[in-house]
Length: 116
Length: 112
Image (cartoon, rainbow over all chains, first blue to last red; front, side, top):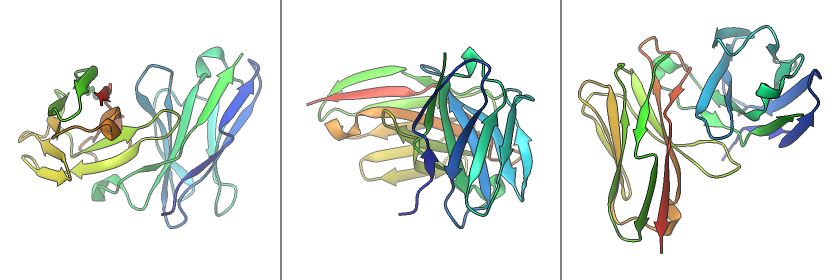
């Protein structure tokens, strides 16, 4: 069964550094997402992306964050200047269709980001 | 921000027992999904419920969406150790957007 793949599985970075988290969504999916889960807390929505633009973002997704689909397969999340509180598990997800059609999200296994 | 509260937060039961996990909100959702998450992995979709009052069965798991589409339950019959995991409910609001609001999670442990 096709799956969403994320790399790296674990990223350690120093505060203030830029990080790029990478995702390869399922190939025929059109909607892409990033969620994060701080240790011990619930999964939180960051951003959704469709047709090469952000369709929705949460208040967590501030100017330090950006997303890009640089080619036909990758979907990236960039954090410009990491803060300690950015330490979390970041999940990429994709769906074939939009929420209007209740299209299910398929999640990757996440990248654990540790900011020191 | 829509709030989904799950109860109980932790549940430890013996193999063969039945259990019910609840997901409650004061908000109306266009659909509600249940996921299971293993340590170090992403959430895996179990079911999506869309219609108020809808009941879906997945082997020993029964999912129900409340009539008012504000709450849902997951019932497991004759729990097995393989059912151990974190169960998450997540709802889509009425705009139909895919920014899911996740619940607080129920960590289930089934003791052999």
